Image (cartoon, helix red, strand yellow):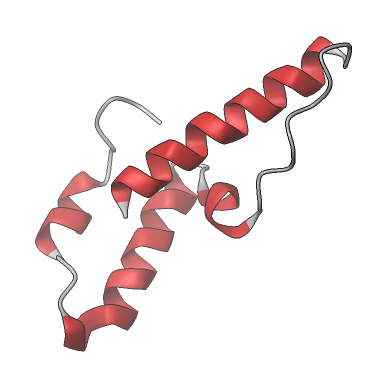
Length: 75
């Protein structure tokens, strides 16, 4: 995700308040889908790979952890 979400204005214009949860939830999902980060909301982070795991596996895990943190900040 870039330093500023490309669709940040959607989230800014549609703040979460009790009666609009479904609309807000869909907007968050739309933004995350556009940013190719929806998987971080839908999939659990697996345990950290072993230190002797392939570099690609370790990089994928680190990427997922970073995206998960950014998704948490968006929400």
